[in-house]
Image (cartoon, rainbow, N blue to C red; front, side, top):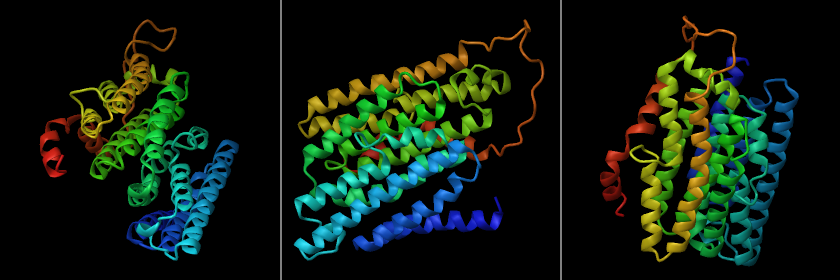
Length: 349
């Protein structure tokens, strides 16, 4: 892609997100979301592959539907209450419609069906942008709308997403689909605590972005798209393969890795709020996600690609990728757990 065009598209992505962050009026927020959607579509379709075009079409249709629902909800609220302000979304119909529209935007269950299919049709770099940056603007709006929404709806969305995210990833062989279901499960954890401790939702989102970036960059460096392709990744880069396993376990939320921090704090907060059943269900669904992360770890470490040679490859090609961003996010994805007391004190938990 032409570097000037790429610069314009990435700048528009940033502009759309910042516009939504800065807005207190529904129309301005909607405009930011639309700029965001229109900026990523050329990036998604740049491969000239039928799967990429199909993924782009599916993404455009779902995002357009969600944007129309947001516009409908805000217009309904302005008509019935006379307010366009995001914080003043008070009518029950408008609030529920807006929340479901934002759930569709980010890919929460039960409106998650587009996310694995779309992610499967993209290359890993665009998939990373879709899984991280594209979640920021809708989440900024969700955090503002959440205090007004019925708590039963939010808890149901959260638990359903953690369950679907764990269950859906069990039978997958494509790594991009596995990461899509992982994304759904993590979003479920964020939404679950959104009404009770918004600061925890923000912490979970930051941790999710760090760990997902590390996972995507690792797969891109190894050039792996299926579980079978992971079996030869240890011959390409043994150190990276060892670290990738730890990153996957961090995504699963195992101590003593960074991914355990948000899960631990969320379960603690849910118990404090008198929701032990929700906390137990969320912890149980995390085991489903952990199973498919362990499956990937097994493929990377304990299986060997079938070949005719008795020995491993004695030579390795030098990497041409820039590995500094990968190194930074991997360190963060593995080593932030000791900071938990400081984070808890900072967030007044």
